[in-house]
Image (cartoon, rainbow, N blue to C red):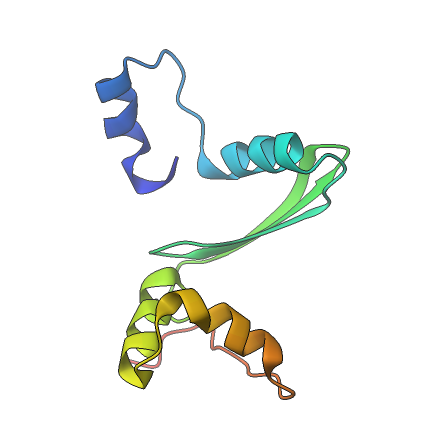
Length: 106
């Protein structure tokens, strides 16, 4: 899936290539039956996928800016001197919510 899906398909000899929205929906349904929402924070974009009975009914992507993506979060953790593995747990301890822009400020 993702930006490397076509190369991975060639290397693995896959006969079918699916987009990452479909791949996330199938994997989420297999891992957590009855799931309704998938939030994926990738290296290049973020996705919100809404499912009903395992079928994608809507999705939204942030692909305009790197804010909120995995690479952005890696950079911010490094700037703060916090291991990325601890970043999520610290965020969950916060009593204040933070908005991350969906558009690039450059």
